[in-house]
Length: 458
Image (cartoon, rainbow, N blue to C red; front, side):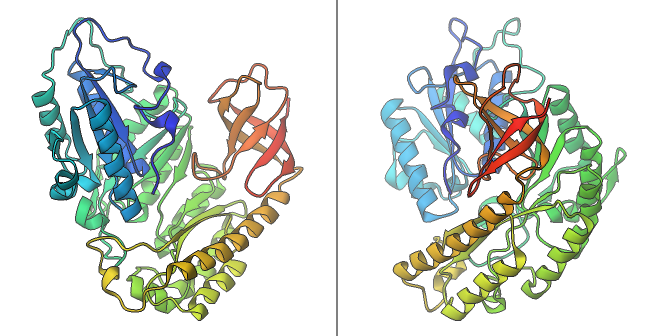
């Protein structure tokens, strides 16, 4: 797990991201948001609540009366990063409130940083606000402190994460997310739609649907229908697709009912993109992981999905060096990759996580073997990516503009690319008149290992 990119971190972001200058006497809060997009959404909600109470938002430690650090605790490396961020905030500011996944174990944090003002767990918004009130009392001016209808966003204006549920009902042995964030708790579909409608009304061109298990959305609500919207991922995807923005689905488990989403992609209601955490391919490895999906069926499902929607992009993540992984099991994963031909792939070397049941498994893989297997896996994944991108040369496709630098080079994404985790398409010339957030047609004229280059079609 890594932190959000510097331009999405309030402590590191350009001052222009927060254009409102604090009024005289206005209390200000900074925030460091670490970890996954789900945590980023939590940070946005906390800052939106604080803005509504009259607090200003500082992009720098020095300008803040206190700093909130929203932590990640999924892996030991993420815990170390969170502790380092807390220490930096304490050194630079002094008044620090900790929240997020690592906050589920407050003694772990206070044992290293006893001077933090408060520690709260994930999505405990009221406790965070109470802690801020105690450290920096609010001083609202109802005639001045007006909150924009879109709330506070930590992403560029043209895309936004849309969290549809919290928690997870799975019991994967390497994961402690259910312990930190609890069981599946889906938002009502009408509430998700209301938020999505407001986002689109305020200029958002792409909605990135996130949760811990998107395909299980609504199961805890028995897929109820309320205010005209059914809490089921297929119905929700169809409803979101009616808003006219790009809709991108993340964290989809390959349950049988996922097939119902593919026609929506083929029809253009939802982007032909699925982010599916397969994690491995050997049945014995998956069994030791306690994964909910059967590997032997996934290749058949992938073939079926591509038959319905030939343009579908499949992204996934995998773990190598899981306890007990043999060379034969790893080779099965490589062979599976040859057959699956996934478009976008990430890979992690297994790490022990305190509290995860996988730490107690026998036959842990030596670090040097993990590294060697990771390198072999990534070499194969890179070759697949390079071949797939080369096949796109000459095609015309729609892209969304994420950035235009001072030299006029536009950094864009195709429908196959999620922000910050996938590749980019670059336009080197003829970008006069383009703006960030535009969706334009481009002819691809060059391909690399992970990125594309193209020219605007006028």
